[in-house]
Length: 282
Image (tube, rainbow, N blue to C red; front, side, top):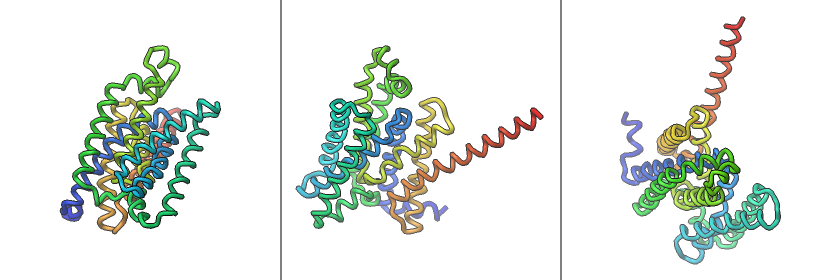
């Protein structure tokens, strides 16, 4: 037991655990809608699209969270503008903004070596360096994600499966989609200090994707997703401590590994059931 509890003896590792759990709550709640609505590519674009905002904020000397939020707005607005003006599919517009914003961020970082180390921390996360203020922001984000998901449950659910039906029912699918994208942007902006912009995508998509393999009802999927997310946080921090690995990368990699474990388990179970039915029929 001491082997498992030892990593969380220090105050900064306890804050890391709390931060990871709060990120897991936010990502598990919002990520379910991302997976069901097939917004994974947009989520990835937002995760990378905030990089130039963070880089400019670090260069000018103001809060990187503000820069990240502004960059997220530019990314979402840019995708909508290109899609409406060009008539191109949304995934094409998303890809253009994704590459454009990421390239801009890299260019800014490459020309400003003085703060490259700080920006690297934002890119890959610093879960062991979170502060009480960071915990407060992440706590508020988790509450907002849950409340908005509860209030907009019917609209999000209908939008995820049939946008035309959502319009017929008067659920305002465009507004619901805008709110959903806002939730994704909020998740990225409030979590990048802990998990990093390049690794948040793993926490946002992997636990919900794994949950959809074992559950069908949305509330159950969210609960199972949260379980997978918290498990990934705890295991990731354990691995980080005992194997001297990067904390954020360990959590993100563990969440992806859990998905493949669940997928393998379901594949084996279905194969076993198929053989059992075939044997019974014979």
